[in-house]
Amino acid sequence: MANAALAAAMGGVAERNFPGDSYYAQLKCHDPAGDDYYVTFTRKTVRISSYQDDAIRSTIETRADATPALM
Image (cartoon, rainbow, N blue to C red; front, side, top):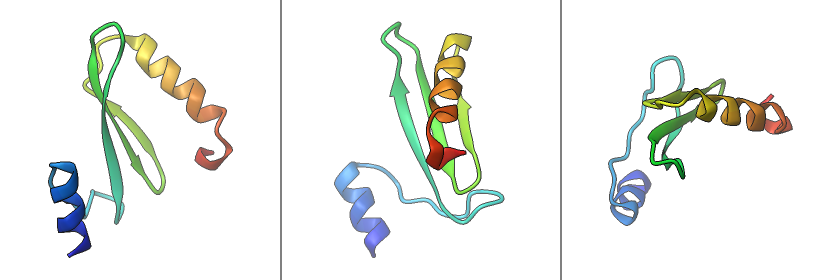
């Protein structure tokens, strides 16, 4: 029920059972240069997908490396 209420409030679809993990959050992001990409957080990983510019990956890796909770 909570997943359905959250999905309705955010205009999305509640998902579970990401391969290799029980829960995840996926963010659709927009780079100021115009590139749209996704960042997916699981309990064990941070994944970046659909990006065109390697500078996006570099920026996210630098930020993740500097965030103790993600180490």
